[in-house]
Image (cartoon, rainbow, N blue to C red; front, top):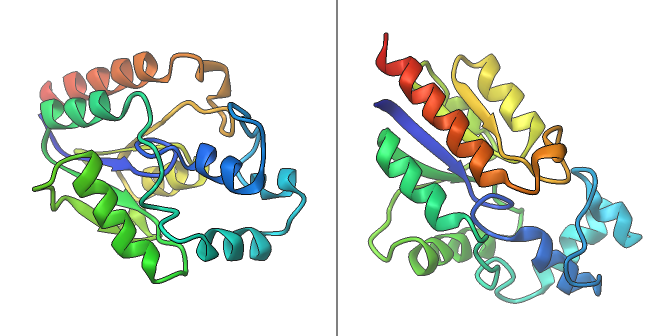
Length: 182
């Protein structure tokens, strides 16, 4: 069993892309092809985040991803401990909305939430991060942990995005088996 499994929130458990598409009037089902996709909306980063911050309950209203329950179950099954780690927006209401989202969509008793843009500080041998950010995965690995890049159209695993849960489940089971043999 792994010591700790860290699940990213936005893009992995919560559907951040659909939430921003609705906010910016993009067609339902549109998917970005790169990480900083705000330029596809015709805005810069500052304008993008300002509009997100101006929408009351933006973070709380995000829909769960179709694989949220299965990922939480995998984390519970393969980790001694598990947490959800999420990077906050600058808007102070983001923090409380993310906490409320976890209570509503994961578990009303869930206190396994870490809010930080520095997820790699949790990294160590025996700890696994599941995240959709190439950058977060690289930093986690550099800090000594194992990371699984959750396939999405906006990261290096875009070719596997049609079935991200099968890929992630297989990788997590391989890592857990490897760790058990040590």
